[in-house]
Image (cartoon, rainbow, N blue to C red; front, side, top):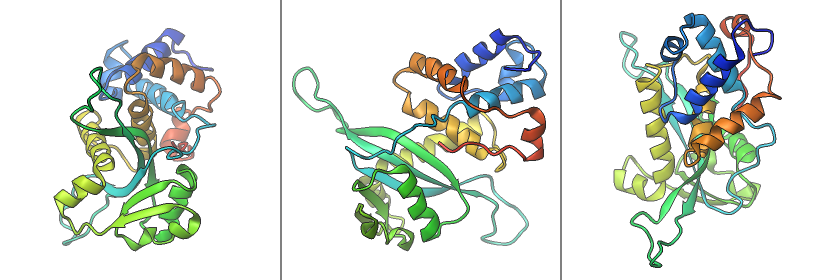
Length: 253
């Protein structure tokens, strides 16, 4: 909120709402709370999203297997021919953690749950793009589960324990081999459509960062509120002009 005419309390209120509400907060919803102009609400929320990426974040998967996959995000395209779309490619990685035993020593119904998540807007599904993502987000030596796409074929040579499986659109195989990342993708898309009614590719990475931030702290919402305040103090924030001109580059979670 530095160099802003908006009261500091408004920034704190936005930080609280965006971190403690499960579906997040759109600029339209936020502007109604303290009675802001849309442009002001939009900028405040993007300043907060810039503070949702911890600079010293570590790699995931050092102790747990990691599922990696890609998905398409965006709306349908009409009138441009069959198979043509302008959807964005999002690649994700999520830890698969075992649940603790209940008080009676029995495992819960679901023996696994999703641990830490990473999401990134990708230019394509090439081997270079996908292996770089894995190298930058997953600890070397980790067990990495993917589908049979040949873009992941080089992971074993890079020191990962690669466990690929050809899924061929089989729902049962997908649910067995890559359940957690697909749940994360499904919830992401529901939030983008339900809360934000779709977002532009220009700002999509910021919304991915927001989703990852809340997802990784979903069991501790008040910790999320404290975290964003601590990170945002040291984070660079966009201005309204740089957001709309495209000069601002969103950090990557």
